[in-house]
Length: 356
Ligand code: SF4
Image 1 (cartoon, rainbow, N blue to C red):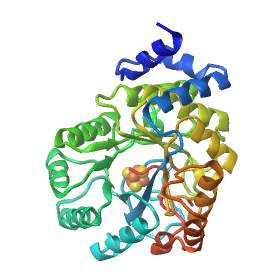
Image 2: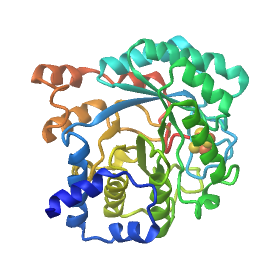
Image 3: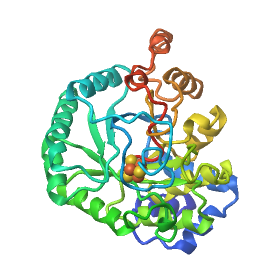
Image 4: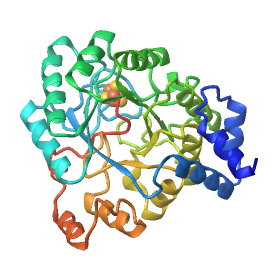
């Protein structure tokens, strides 16, 4: 068997038994070799020039009882966000329609909750039904879910549930003390049992060490099935949070995280998420080359600015990405003129670091 055929065969098998030593070895590969390996695997599973586009809307902002040290929405930190109650269903649907008009295929709705309360569920269910009726894929992130709530959301038509593992199990209690790693895994299990797809990733740059980044990716890859979407977030430092002054993570280490995530989870959409607004075009391009094939677009992420929609359109044009959806100069021009209506939807600067 040729080396290429053997590599292909090896990579077509989704593994759930990754060990830390072999994942560490991937991180330590020469950069060019790692990029080549990641891109080779990427091309076996995806069109290399397609990037899935999602829009994220905060449907309820701030006053969260959890203590995630990176998050502007925690009620425990003095941050510069405008707290918002749960949005009205019709306002959410209006935002979803605008997102669809701007080219999004998935609409993600996030609420700063520890978990949804019973009184919140009817509105949330109506949001899912309404967004689904617009022909968009639906995703929500509402914190921890019971099995009953997961079933209710699935019945309403929720396609994806986002619930990030945040960091490694070893580093977890340095970042969050109001819940446990097992709580996270339990919610992911409830989401899977209900039959929904899973969006789960983490944040790097939280002051964790290299072993923690290995451990986070091992946790994600060894979920069975692996998450369909894997957001990899670069910490956006928010003034007022305990991590506001944490040391920067080297950009190459971030790109290596994307590449290793692609290798470990070859069929998952790896999403370049929070932190993208602070990345220049070349950095984003290296992330796409490493296997990132999903972004949030034209929207306020949960605590940080996202590059304006028109900048994304221009970058995609330069890279030849999604040329079928950005087919002509006319269309691109039209999109350039569009204001990021979703951004205007909420007048806070903030929304994200990692969705719940
Ligand atoms: S990340 Fe989510 S759970 Fe944690 S404080 Fe922020 S909104 Fe609350």
